[in-house]
Image (cartoon, rainbow, N blue to C red; front, side, top):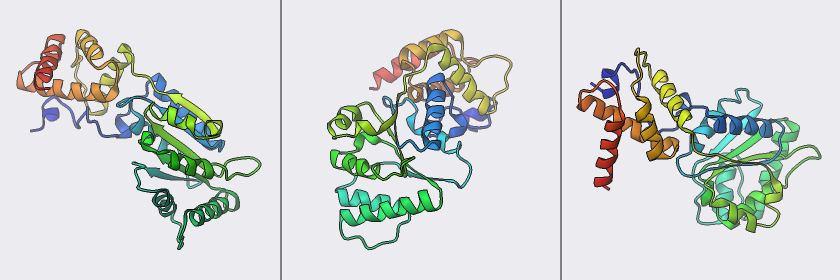
Length: 272
């Protein structure tokens, strides 16, 4: 029997997979989502969502896709922008967009992309969105490519809506690319959760997993320990809470208290 079943849960509550169903909308994440949706609907061009590892950028991206449920919006998602050359990078974007062509150079690809974006964005009145995750892996040549694509526009709007989810280390690199920062219509930095938000996140995920017990599985002191150890990073919180529930079963305890959290942390530190 799975550990979460024995606790009265239907699903795994603290998976680190980017499942929008378990995405807790903190104030930071809600603001980022609303501003992103506005920027895309107004076709403003480039949006940057920045944050440290484990702040929930990937899950936020998946959640955002659910905000656009009609065929007016065409989303393409690049999970890892790691390529050997500018040619391969452009080739990947073209294939992602479904462009059939026999491009022999980077200039050919850029011309085909411009024609495609004009056809979709102007003639068919579609909104094309390219969402790049792990954006800190973008090299300067690739940023130059994206800057060129953002040049394609009408008098009223950008033909390509580009959303880059990245760690903060991307910022200095962007600033070195000429005129790139000028094209940023939205820059938002996601900060870690507060202690109160951690409690809400834990309760939210347990509820989504089917928990309907009369009391809390995590005591207030346990939440304080979790906050102190994770510093509010959602991925760390999920991993620690998962381990807490495992130990809850193994030690035959009813609730996760601060002592149990401290024991788990010490054990993790011993094993590196």
